[in-house]
Image 1 (tube, rainbow, N blue to C red):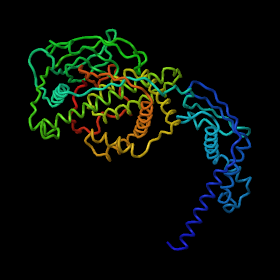
Image 2 (image 1 turned 90 degrees about the vertical axis):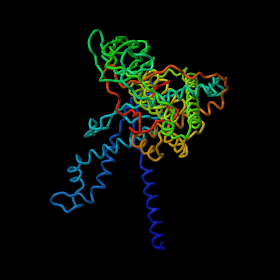
Image 3 (image 1 turned 180 degrees about the vertical axis):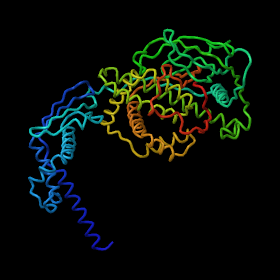
Image 4 (image 1 turned 180 degrees about the horizontal axis):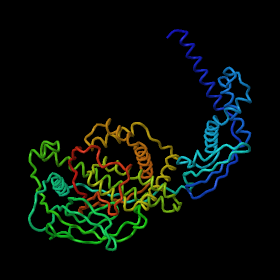
Length: 504
Protein backbone atom coordinates (compact mmCIF):
# COMPACT_ATOMS: atom_id res chain seq x y z
CA UNK A 1 0.00 0.00 0.00
CA UNK A 2 1.38 3.46 -0.92
CA UNK A 3 1.70 6.33 1.52
CA UNK A 4 -1.16 8.13 -0.24
CA UNK A 5 -3.41 5.09 0.23
CA UNK A 6 -2.52 4.95 3.91
CA UNK A 7 -3.36 8.62 4.35
CA UNK A 8 -6.66 8.15 2.53
CA UNK A 9 -7.56 5.17 4.74
CA UNK A 10 -6.67 7.13 7.89
CA UNK A 11 -8.79 10.08 6.72
CA UNK A 12 -11.72 7.75 6.03
CA UNK A 13 -11.41 6.26 9.53
CA UNK A 14 -11.33 9.73 11.09
CA UNK A 15 -14.43 10.74 9.10
CA UNK A 16 -16.25 7.60 10.15
CA UNK A 17 -15.41 8.14 13.81
CA UNK A 18 -16.59 11.75 13.56
CA UNK A 19 -19.86 10.66 11.98
CA UNK A 20 -20.42 8.08 14.72
CA UNK A 21 -19.66 10.64 17.42
CA UNK A 22 -22.12 13.06 15.82
CA UNK A 23 -24.78 10.34 15.69
CA UNK A 24 -24.19 9.41 19.32
CA UNK A 25 -24.32 13.09 20.31
CA UNK A 26 -27.77 13.52 18.77
CA UNK A 27 -29.99 15.67 20.93
CA UNK A 28 -32.38 13.49 22.94
CA UNK A 29 -36.12 13.88 22.59
CA UNK A 30 -38.27 15.51 25.22
CA UNK A 31 -40.65 12.67 26.02
CA UNK A 32 -43.52 12.16 28.40
CA UNK A 33 -43.65 8.40 29.05
CA UNK A 34 -46.39 6.60 30.94
CA UNK A 35 -46.04 2.86 31.62
CA UNK A 36 -48.93 0.73 32.86
CA UNK A 37 -48.43 -2.89 33.96
CA UNK A 38 -51.03 -5.18 32.38
CA UNK A 39 -49.35 -8.27 33.89
CA UNK A 40 -45.92 -9.38 35.05
CA UNK A 41 -44.80 -9.70 31.42
CA UNK A 42 -46.89 -7.01 29.69
CA UNK A 43 -46.59 -3.24 29.67
CA UNK A 44 -48.83 -0.66 28.00
CA UNK A 45 -46.71 2.35 27.09
CA UNK A 46 -48.00 5.81 26.18
CA UNK A 47 -45.42 8.14 24.65
CA UNK A 48 -45.87 11.85 23.99
CA UNK A 49 -43.34 13.63 21.75
CA UNK A 50 -43.17 17.42 22.15
CA UNK A 51 -44.15 19.74 19.30
CA UNK A 52 -40.66 21.28 19.46
CA UNK A 53 -39.08 17.90 18.70
CA UNK A 54 -41.47 17.33 15.80
CA UNK A 55 -40.55 20.68 14.27
CA UNK A 56 -36.83 19.97 14.83
CA UNK A 57 -37.10 16.66 12.93
CA UNK A 58 -38.96 18.36 10.07
CA UNK A 59 -36.29 21.07 9.98
CA UNK A 60 -33.52 18.46 9.77
CA UNK A 61 -35.29 16.73 6.89
CA UNK A 62 -35.73 20.01 5.04
CA UNK A 63 -32.05 20.83 5.61
CA UNK A 64 -31.17 17.64 3.71
CA UNK A 65 -33.79 18.29 1.02
CA UNK A 66 -33.03 21.97 0.25
CA UNK A 67 -29.83 21.53 -1.84
CA UNK A 68 -31.63 19.32 -4.38
CA UNK A 69 -35.28 20.38 -4.05
CA UNK A 70 -36.91 20.74 -7.46
CA UNK A 71 -39.73 23.32 -7.64
CA UNK A 72 -41.23 24.54 -10.95
CA UNK A 73 -39.90 28.02 -11.83
CA UNK A 74 -36.71 27.60 -9.82
CA UNK A 75 -33.42 25.93 -10.46
CA UNK A 76 -32.80 22.82 -8.23
CA UNK A 77 -31.84 23.95 -4.78
CA UNK A 78 -32.78 27.59 -5.40
CA UNK A 79 -36.42 27.65 -4.29
CA UNK A 80 -37.32 29.60 -1.10
CA UNK A 81 -37.33 27.39 2.00
CA UNK A 82 -40.93 28.25 2.95
CA UNK A 83 -42.09 27.20 -0.51
CA UNK A 84 -40.13 23.92 -0.26
CA UNK A 85 -41.58 23.25 3.20
CA UNK A 86 -45.11 23.89 1.99
CA UNK A 87 -44.69 21.76 -1.14
CA UNK A 88 -42.89 18.76 0.37
CA UNK A 89 -44.21 18.57 3.96
CA UNK A 90 -46.69 15.78 3.24
CA UNK A 91 -44.08 13.82 1.27
CA UNK A 92 -41.52 13.78 4.08
CA UNK A 93 -44.10 13.35 6.84
CA UNK A 94 -43.73 9.53 6.85
CA UNK A 95 -39.93 9.84 7.03
CA UNK A 96 -40.22 12.18 10.01
CA UNK A 97 -42.78 9.89 11.64
CA UNK A 98 -40.55 6.86 11.16
CA UNK A 99 -37.52 8.65 12.62
CA UNK A 100 -39.51 9.98 15.58
CA UNK A 101 -40.98 6.56 16.37
CA UNK A 102 -37.64 4.76 16.05
CA UNK A 103 -35.72 7.29 18.13
CA UNK A 104 -38.42 7.68 20.76
CA UNK A 105 -38.85 3.91 21.23
CA UNK A 106 -35.06 3.51 21.47
CA UNK A 107 -35.03 6.22 24.12
CA UNK A 108 -37.94 4.59 25.97
CA UNK A 109 -36.05 1.29 26.02
CA UNK A 110 -32.93 3.02 27.38
CA UNK A 111 -34.72 5.07 30.01
CA UNK A 112 -37.17 2.51 31.35
CA UNK A 113 -36.27 -0.27 33.75
CA UNK A 114 -38.10 -3.04 31.89
CA UNK A 115 -36.30 -5.40 29.51
CA UNK A 116 -38.27 -5.99 26.31
CA UNK A 117 -38.55 -9.57 24.98
CA UNK A 118 -40.69 -8.79 21.92
CA UNK A 119 -41.24 -6.11 19.33
CA UNK A 120 -43.71 -3.31 20.22
CA UNK A 121 -47.26 -4.04 19.10
CA UNK A 122 -48.67 -0.99 17.34
CA UNK A 123 -50.06 0.06 13.97
CA UNK A 124 -47.62 2.36 12.16
CA UNK A 125 -50.21 3.45 9.60
CA UNK A 126 -52.69 4.45 12.30
CA UNK A 127 -50.25 6.96 13.80
CA UNK A 128 -50.22 10.41 12.24
CA UNK A 129 -48.29 13.59 12.96
CA UNK A 130 -50.68 16.36 14.02
CA UNK A 131 -50.70 19.73 12.25
CA UNK A 132 -49.92 21.30 15.58
CA UNK A 133 -49.23 20.18 19.12
CA UNK A 134 -47.45 17.05 20.42
CA UNK A 135 -47.53 13.53 18.95
CA UNK A 136 -48.97 10.83 21.23
CA UNK A 137 -48.90 7.12 20.45
CA UNK A 138 -49.38 3.91 22.44
CA UNK A 139 -48.12 0.36 22.21
CA UNK A 140 -48.11 -2.92 24.11
CA UNK A 141 -44.85 -4.76 24.70
CA UNK A 142 -43.84 -8.00 26.39
CA UNK A 143 -41.09 -7.67 28.96
CA UNK A 144 -39.01 -9.88 31.17
CA UNK A 145 -40.78 -10.18 34.55
CA UNK A 146 -39.27 -8.68 37.65
CA UNK A 147 -38.93 -11.17 40.50
CA UNK A 148 -36.78 -12.12 43.46
CA UNK A 149 -34.32 -14.78 42.39
CA UNK A 150 -34.93 -17.98 44.39
CA UNK A 151 -32.09 -19.52 46.38
CA UNK A 152 -30.51 -21.93 43.90
CA UNK A 153 -27.43 -22.94 45.83
CA UNK A 154 -27.40 -26.04 48.01
CA UNK A 155 -30.44 -27.81 46.48
CA UNK A 156 -31.02 -31.43 47.53
CA UNK A 157 -31.56 -33.56 44.43
CA UNK A 158 -32.04 -37.19 43.42
CA UNK A 159 -29.56 -38.47 40.83
CA UNK A 160 -30.78 -41.47 38.82
CA UNK A 161 -28.26 -43.88 37.33
CA UNK A 162 -28.10 -47.37 35.87
CA UNK A 163 -25.38 -49.76 34.85
CA UNK A 164 -26.52 -51.17 31.52
CA UNK A 165 -26.52 -54.99 31.69
CA UNK A 166 -26.80 -57.80 29.13
CA UNK A 167 -30.57 -58.13 29.60
CA UNK A 168 -31.00 -54.45 28.79
CA UNK A 169 -28.95 -54.86 25.63
CA UNK A 170 -30.82 -58.02 24.59
CA UNK A 171 -34.17 -56.25 24.96
CA UNK A 172 -32.99 -53.23 22.96
CA UNK A 173 -31.63 -55.43 20.18
CA UNK A 174 -35.02 -57.15 19.94
CA UNK A 175 -36.66 -53.74 19.58
CA UNK A 176 -33.97 -52.72 17.13
CA UNK A 177 -34.62 -55.77 14.96
CA UNK A 178 -38.36 -55.11 15.09
CA UNK A 179 -37.71 -51.86 13.18
CA UNK A 180 -36.30 -54.01 10.36
CA UNK A 181 -39.31 -56.31 10.38
CA UNK A 182 -41.55 -56.97 7.41
CA UNK A 183 -45.30 -56.79 7.78
CA UNK A 184 -47.08 -59.66 6.05
CA UNK A 185 -50.83 -60.24 5.73
CA UNK A 186 -52.22 -62.47 8.45
CA UNK A 187 -55.36 -64.55 8.64
CA UNK A 188 -57.23 -64.66 11.90
CA UNK A 189 -57.43 -62.47 14.95
CA UNK A 190 -55.08 -59.78 16.22
CA UNK A 191 -52.45 -60.92 18.69
CA UNK A 192 -49.76 -59.18 20.70
CA UNK A 193 -46.89 -58.12 18.44
CA UNK A 194 -49.09 -57.67 15.36
CA UNK A 195 -49.80 -54.49 13.41
CA UNK A 196 -53.26 -53.38 12.33
CA UNK A 197 -54.32 -51.27 9.37
CA UNK A 198 -57.19 -49.12 10.63
CA UNK A 199 -59.38 -46.17 9.87
CA UNK A 200 -60.25 -44.09 12.89
CA UNK A 201 -63.61 -42.41 13.18
CA UNK A 202 -64.04 -39.71 15.82
CA UNK A 203 -67.46 -38.84 17.24
CA UNK A 204 -68.71 -36.48 19.92
CA UNK A 205 -72.21 -36.88 21.31
CA UNK A 206 -73.02 -39.23 18.46
CA UNK A 207 -71.97 -36.77 15.74
CA UNK A 208 -68.99 -37.36 13.46
CA UNK A 209 -66.12 -34.98 14.20
CA UNK A 210 -63.35 -36.24 11.88
CA UNK A 211 -61.86 -39.42 10.46
CA UNK A 212 -58.48 -40.68 9.39
CA UNK A 213 -57.10 -42.21 6.24
CA UNK A 214 -55.67 -45.72 6.48
CA UNK A 215 -53.11 -45.88 9.29
CA UNK A 216 -50.85 -48.78 10.19
CA UNK A 217 -50.13 -48.94 13.91
CA UNK A 218 -48.45 -51.55 16.10
CA UNK A 219 -50.48 -53.31 18.74
CA UNK A 220 -48.97 -51.54 21.75
CA UNK A 221 -50.38 -50.56 25.14
CA UNK A 222 -50.51 -46.82 24.40
CA UNK A 223 -51.34 -44.65 21.39
CA UNK A 224 -50.31 -41.01 21.79
CA UNK A 225 -52.31 -38.56 19.67
CA UNK A 226 -51.59 -34.81 19.59
CA UNK A 227 -54.64 -34.09 21.78
CA UNK A 228 -55.07 -37.24 23.93
CA UNK A 229 -53.51 -40.54 24.94
CA UNK A 230 -55.37 -43.82 24.50
CA UNK A 231 -54.43 -46.41 27.13
CA UNK A 232 -54.74 -50.19 26.71
CA UNK A 233 -54.97 -50.13 22.92
CA UNK A 234 -53.48 -53.63 22.78
CA UNK A 235 -56.27 -54.95 24.99
CA UNK A 236 -58.87 -53.18 22.86
CA UNK A 237 -57.90 -54.79 19.55
CA UNK A 238 -56.59 -58.20 20.64
CA UNK A 239 -58.88 -60.87 19.22
CA UNK A 240 -60.35 -58.58 16.53
CA UNK A 241 -60.39 -59.73 12.89
CA UNK A 242 -60.22 -57.79 9.63
CA UNK A 243 -63.61 -56.25 8.86
CA UNK A 244 -64.54 -55.79 12.51
CA UNK A 245 -64.73 -52.61 14.58
CA UNK A 246 -63.86 -51.63 18.12
CA UNK A 247 -65.09 -48.50 19.90
CA UNK A 248 -63.62 -46.81 22.94
CA UNK A 249 -63.56 -43.43 24.67
CA UNK A 250 -60.74 -40.97 25.15
CA UNK A 251 -60.59 -37.70 27.06
CA UNK A 252 -59.02 -34.69 25.38
CA UNK A 253 -56.32 -32.68 27.12
CA UNK A 254 -57.30 -29.49 28.91
CA UNK A 255 -54.57 -27.60 27.04
CA UNK A 256 -55.49 -28.17 23.38
CA UNK A 257 -55.90 -25.19 21.04
CA UNK A 258 -59.66 -25.72 20.59
CA UNK A 259 -61.03 -24.27 23.82
CA UNK A 260 -64.54 -25.67 23.25
CA UNK A 261 -63.24 -29.24 23.25
CA UNK A 262 -60.82 -29.04 26.17
CA UNK A 263 -61.42 -31.92 28.59
CA UNK A 264 -64.24 -33.33 26.46
CA UNK A 265 -64.77 -37.06 25.95
CA UNK A 266 -64.68 -38.39 22.40
CA UNK A 267 -65.68 -41.76 21.00
CA UNK A 268 -63.11 -43.47 18.77
CA UNK A 269 -64.10 -46.23 16.37
CA UNK A 270 -61.28 -48.36 14.99
CA UNK A 271 -62.30 -50.08 11.77
CA UNK A 272 -59.79 -52.87 11.25
CA UNK A 273 -59.07 -53.22 7.53
CA UNK A 274 -56.21 -55.67 7.74
CA UNK A 275 -54.07 -57.54 10.22
CA UNK A 276 -50.32 -57.71 9.68
CA UNK A 277 -47.89 -60.14 11.22
CA UNK A 278 -44.50 -58.77 12.11
CA UNK A 279 -41.68 -61.02 10.93
CA UNK A 280 -38.53 -60.03 12.75
CA UNK A 281 -35.29 -60.83 10.91
CA UNK A 282 -32.47 -62.88 12.34
CA UNK A 283 -29.27 -61.13 13.30
CA UNK A 284 -27.51 -61.97 10.05
CA UNK A 285 -24.35 -60.50 8.56
CA UNK A 286 -26.50 -58.48 6.17
CA UNK A 287 -28.51 -57.00 9.02
CA UNK A 288 -25.34 -56.17 10.92
CA UNK A 289 -23.92 -54.48 7.85
CA UNK A 290 -27.06 -52.33 7.53
CA UNK A 291 -26.18 -50.84 10.93
CA UNK A 292 -22.55 -50.28 9.97
CA UNK A 293 -21.08 -52.89 12.32
CA UNK A 294 -18.92 -55.92 11.58
CA UNK A 295 -20.27 -58.39 14.11
CA UNK A 296 -22.68 -58.87 17.00
CA UNK A 297 -20.09 -57.71 19.52
CA UNK A 298 -19.79 -54.34 17.78
CA UNK A 299 -23.59 -54.06 17.64
CA UNK A 300 -23.84 -54.71 21.37
CA UNK A 301 -21.25 -52.01 21.98
CA UNK A 302 -23.26 -49.56 19.86
CA UNK A 303 -26.50 -50.49 21.64
CA UNK A 304 -24.84 -50.11 25.04
CA UNK A 305 -23.59 -46.66 24.06
CA UNK A 306 -27.06 -45.66 22.83
CA UNK A 307 -28.74 -46.88 26.02
CA UNK A 308 -26.16 -45.10 28.16
CA UNK A 309 -26.88 -41.85 26.29
CA UNK A 310 -30.60 -42.36 26.80
CA UNK A 311 -30.14 -43.01 30.52
CA UNK A 312 -27.93 -39.93 30.69
CA UNK A 313 -30.67 -37.94 28.97
CA UNK A 314 -33.35 -39.26 31.35
CA UNK A 315 -31.09 -38.50 34.31
CA UNK A 316 -30.66 -34.96 33.05
CA UNK A 317 -34.42 -34.62 32.55
CA UNK A 318 -35.11 -35.91 36.06
CA UNK A 319 -32.64 -33.43 37.54
CA UNK A 320 -34.06 -30.64 35.44
CA UNK A 321 -37.61 -31.42 36.56
CA UNK A 322 -36.51 -31.33 40.20
CA UNK A 323 -34.57 -28.09 39.75
CA UNK A 324 -37.43 -26.53 37.80
CA UNK A 325 -39.95 -27.49 40.46
CA UNK A 326 -37.79 -26.03 43.23
CA UNK A 327 -36.98 -22.83 41.35
CA UNK A 328 -40.49 -22.12 40.03
CA UNK A 329 -42.38 -23.11 43.17
CA UNK A 330 -42.85 -19.47 44.17
CA UNK A 331 -43.21 -18.11 40.62
CA UNK A 332 -46.83 -17.00 40.37
CA UNK A 333 -46.47 -14.50 37.51
CA UNK A 334 -49.26 -14.08 35.01
CA UNK A 335 -48.00 -15.00 31.55
CA UNK A 336 -49.80 -13.77 28.40
CA UNK A 337 -51.24 -16.53 26.14
CA UNK A 338 -49.43 -15.27 23.02
CA UNK A 339 -46.11 -15.49 24.83
CA UNK A 340 -46.95 -19.00 26.03
CA UNK A 341 -47.78 -20.14 22.50
CA UNK A 342 -44.50 -18.79 21.12
CA UNK A 343 -42.55 -20.33 24.00
CA UNK A 344 -44.25 -23.69 23.40
CA UNK A 345 -42.84 -23.75 19.88
CA UNK A 346 -39.36 -22.86 21.19
CA UNK A 347 -39.60 -25.48 23.95
CA UNK A 348 -40.64 -28.14 21.46
CA UNK A 349 -37.75 -27.23 19.16
CA UNK A 350 -35.29 -27.35 22.07
CA UNK A 351 -36.62 -30.70 23.28
CA UNK A 352 -36.42 -32.26 19.81
CA UNK A 353 -32.82 -31.07 19.43
CA UNK A 354 -31.93 -32.64 22.79
CA UNK A 355 -33.70 -35.92 21.97
CA UNK A 356 -31.88 -36.18 18.64
CA UNK A 357 -28.47 -35.57 20.17
CA UNK A 358 -29.23 -38.13 22.91
CA UNK A 359 -29.87 -41.07 20.58
CA UNK A 360 -33.67 -41.29 20.48
CA UNK A 361 -35.25 -42.38 17.21
CA UNK A 362 -37.89 -40.46 15.29
CA UNK A 363 -40.83 -42.56 16.53
CA UNK A 364 -39.84 -41.82 20.12
CA UNK A 365 -39.57 -38.13 19.29
CA UNK A 366 -43.00 -38.14 17.61
CA UNK A 367 -44.63 -39.74 20.68
CA UNK A 368 -42.93 -37.21 22.94
CA UNK A 369 -44.07 -34.35 20.70
CA UNK A 370 -47.70 -35.51 20.84
CA UNK A 371 -47.51 -35.91 24.61
CA UNK A 372 -46.11 -32.40 24.95
CA UNK A 373 -48.92 -31.00 22.79
CA UNK A 374 -51.51 -32.43 25.18
CA UNK A 375 -50.12 -30.39 28.07
CA UNK A 376 -49.23 -27.24 26.20
CA UNK A 377 -50.06 -24.48 28.66
CA UNK A 378 -49.11 -26.22 31.92
CA UNK A 379 -45.75 -27.43 30.64
CA UNK A 380 -44.99 -24.20 28.81
CA UNK A 381 -45.86 -21.96 31.74
CA UNK A 382 -43.37 -23.82 33.92
CA UNK A 383 -40.69 -23.93 31.22
CA UNK A 384 -41.06 -20.20 30.55
CA UNK A 385 -40.78 -19.36 34.24
CA UNK A 386 -37.75 -21.62 34.41
CA UNK A 387 -36.26 -19.92 31.34
CA UNK A 388 -36.50 -16.45 32.93
CA UNK A 389 -34.95 -17.72 36.16
CA UNK A 390 -32.08 -19.50 34.39
CA UNK A 391 -31.41 -16.41 32.24
CA UNK A 392 -31.20 -14.28 35.41
CA UNK A 393 -28.75 -16.72 36.96
CA UNK A 394 -26.69 -16.72 33.74
CA UNK A 395 -26.50 -12.91 33.81
CA UNK A 396 -25.54 -12.73 37.46
CA UNK A 397 -22.96 -15.52 37.13
CA UNK A 398 -21.55 -14.28 33.81
CA UNK A 399 -22.43 -17.49 31.96
CA UNK A 400 -22.28 -17.07 28.17
CA UNK A 401 -22.26 -19.14 24.99
CA UNK A 402 -19.25 -19.43 22.70
CA UNK A 403 -18.66 -20.81 19.18
CA UNK A 404 -17.23 -24.09 20.50
CA UNK A 405 -20.54 -24.80 22.25
CA UNK A 406 -22.40 -24.62 18.94
CA UNK A 407 -19.82 -26.80 17.20
CA UNK A 408 -20.20 -29.50 19.86
CA UNK A 409 -24.01 -29.50 19.86
CA UNK A 410 -24.20 -29.57 16.06
CA UNK A 411 -21.62 -32.36 15.89
CA UNK A 412 -23.71 -34.48 18.28
CA UNK A 413 -26.87 -33.97 16.21
CA UNK A 414 -24.96 -34.70 13.00
CA UNK A 415 -23.59 -37.93 14.43
CA UNK A 416 -27.05 -39.07 15.48
CA UNK A 417 -28.51 -38.20 12.06
CA UNK A 418 -25.53 -39.68 10.18
CA UNK A 419 -25.18 -36.32 8.46
CA UNK A 420 -22.47 -33.70 8.11
CA UNK A 421 -22.18 -30.89 10.69
CA UNK A 422 -22.20 -28.37 7.84
CA UNK A 423 -25.56 -29.60 6.54
CA UNK A 424 -27.04 -29.76 10.05
CA UNK A 425 -25.94 -26.19 10.78
CA UNK A 426 -27.40 -24.99 7.47
CA UNK A 427 -30.67 -26.77 8.28
CA UNK A 428 -30.89 -25.14 11.72
CA UNK A 429 -30.10 -21.70 10.34
CA UNK A 430 -32.61 -22.11 7.51
CA UNK A 431 -35.37 -23.03 9.97
CA UNK A 432 -34.40 -20.26 12.39
CA UNK A 433 -33.54 -22.74 15.16
CA UNK A 434 -30.18 -21.29 16.20
CA UNK A 435 -31.91 -19.28 18.95
CA UNK A 436 -33.35 -22.52 20.32
CA UNK A 437 -29.86 -24.00 20.27
CA UNK A 438 -28.48 -20.93 22.03
CA UNK A 439 -31.09 -21.25 24.79
CA UNK A 440 -30.25 -24.94 25.12
CA UNK A 441 -26.54 -24.15 25.54
CA UNK A 442 -27.05 -21.38 28.10
CA UNK A 443 -29.61 -23.33 30.12
CA UNK A 444 -27.40 -26.41 30.16
CA UNK A 445 -24.47 -24.37 31.47
CA UNK A 446 -26.61 -22.80 34.18
CA UNK A 447 -27.98 -26.19 35.20
CA UNK A 448 -24.43 -27.49 35.48
CA UNK A 449 -23.60 -24.54 37.75
CA UNK A 450 -26.67 -25.29 39.91
CA UNK A 451 -25.73 -28.98 40.12
CA UNK A 452 -22.19 -28.08 41.13
CA UNK A 453 -23.66 -26.36 44.21
CA UNK A 454 -26.19 -29.15 45.03
CA UNK A 455 -26.10 -32.34 47.10
CA UNK A 456 -27.24 -35.66 45.60
CA UNK A 457 -28.91 -38.90 46.57
CA UNK A 458 -28.34 -41.82 44.16
CA UNK A 459 -31.48 -43.59 42.87
CA UNK A 460 -31.58 -46.69 40.62
CA UNK A 461 -33.27 -46.05 37.28
CA UNK A 462 -35.55 -48.62 35.70
CA UNK A 463 -35.67 -48.70 31.92
CA UNK A 464 -39.31 -48.26 30.85
CA UNK A 465 -40.83 -51.37 29.29
CA UNK A 466 -44.26 -50.11 28.24
CA UNK A 467 -44.27 -49.41 24.52
CA UNK A 468 -46.15 -46.49 23.04
CA UNK A 469 -46.65 -45.15 19.53
CA UNK A 470 -47.04 -41.55 18.43
CA UNK A 471 -49.85 -41.20 15.89
CA UNK A 472 -49.80 -38.34 13.38
CA UNK A 473 -53.57 -37.86 13.32
CA UNK A 474 -55.47 -35.02 14.96
CA UNK A 475 -58.57 -36.14 16.82
CA UNK A 476 -60.13 -32.69 16.39
CA UNK A 477 -59.21 -32.18 12.75
CA UNK A 478 -56.63 -29.48 13.48
CA UNK A 479 -53.49 -29.09 11.40
CA UNK A 480 -50.16 -29.04 13.13
CA UNK A 481 -48.32 -25.75 13.49
CA UNK A 482 -46.35 -25.17 10.33
CA UNK A 483 -43.33 -23.81 12.17
CA UNK A 484 -42.79 -26.84 14.39
CA UNK A 485 -39.63 -28.68 13.33
CA UNK A 486 -40.15 -31.77 11.20
CA UNK A 487 -39.30 -35.11 12.74
CA UNK A 488 -36.64 -35.83 10.13
CA UNK A 489 -33.94 -33.97 8.30
CA UNK A 490 -34.46 -36.15 5.26
CA UNK A 491 -36.79 -38.92 4.27
CA UNK A 492 -33.97 -41.40 3.72
CA UNK A 493 -32.10 -40.73 6.96
CA UNK A 494 -30.84 -44.13 8.18
CA UNK A 495 -31.66 -45.60 11.56
CA UNK A 496 -29.05 -45.62 14.28
CA UNK A 497 -28.07 -48.78 16.16
CA UNK A 498 -29.81 -48.76 19.49
CA UNK A 499 -32.89 -47.03 18.12
CA UNK A 500 -36.36 -48.50 17.86
CA UNK A 501 -39.53 -47.98 15.91
CA UNK A 502 -41.45 -47.76 19.17
CA UNK A 503 -41.10 -45.79 22.36
CA UNK A 504 -40.03 -48.19 25.01
